[in-house]
Length: 103
Image 1 (cartoon, one colour):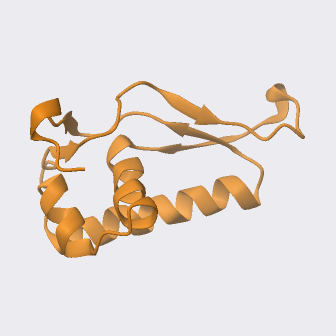
Image 2 (cartoon, rainbow, N blue to C red; image 1 turned 120 degrees about the vertical axis):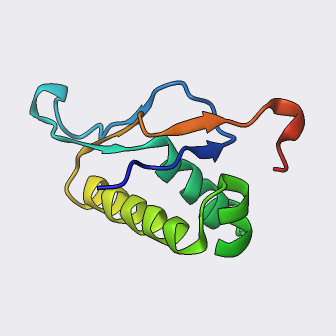
């Protein structure tokens, strides 16, 4: 298996999570979204970038970006539908220097 290429992100690397309030924390299962998946959702869904442009910003190919985004969508759907805690952390990423960020 090939090692993953380092992806460029612009979001903070601080750990984030979202929890349903309707279940006790002790009863929650969780799903983890990596930082590159989080960045893909931000670029495509929040900012509305085309996959080609978003892939350029993350320094990955368009098919790789598509796989990252599909994985993120599946995990977010699992978390929302099945009332799971959504953790955002990890992944093979480097944060773009502040003066080089495009968006």
